[in-house]
Image 1 (cartoon, one colour):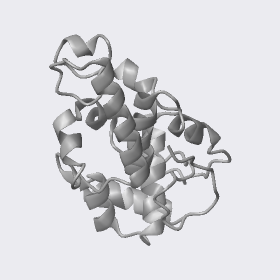
Image 2: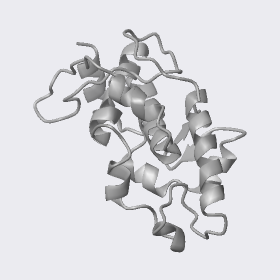
Image 3: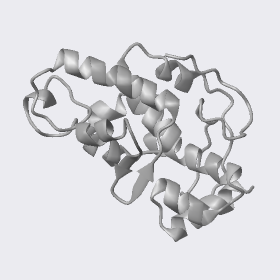
Image 4: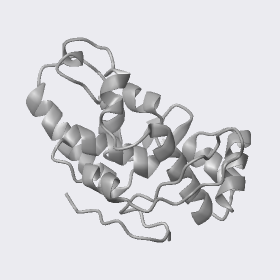
Length: 189
């Protein structure tokens, strides 16, 4: 897996996640604040635990919601090997670092649970015996910060890179125009 180094700046480099911001989209219209340290995110992306690295990569690179991560199916990800990841309401072109981490997780999943009937991408020893998604608690233990904070950070960074194009933000992240406008207002400050 390629190491991901924390670096300041933006420029749309798809090989690394963006710096963290807080307060976006919350009541009070908080202005996003850049994080001083990307090391925790980079450490998780380089984790020897393939599930943790894959979950975090999907979250920080593509801002998937926690529910989208839980409901993501093996078929959706296998189809994304040759095209985009299709989610309800949006299509995601996976960044190469995400593809690498998903590949590692798929190898781990097929080795650890070769006969499971569970259609979900992420499974645990408990969910492998059923067809239910992983628990919220399991998912929340996989990433280094709040899913909301990481998702908000990614969206604000894209707002800055896209010059505040609210329609593009709607399309990329499955947002309505009202939510995208809040992000574009906060991201321009």
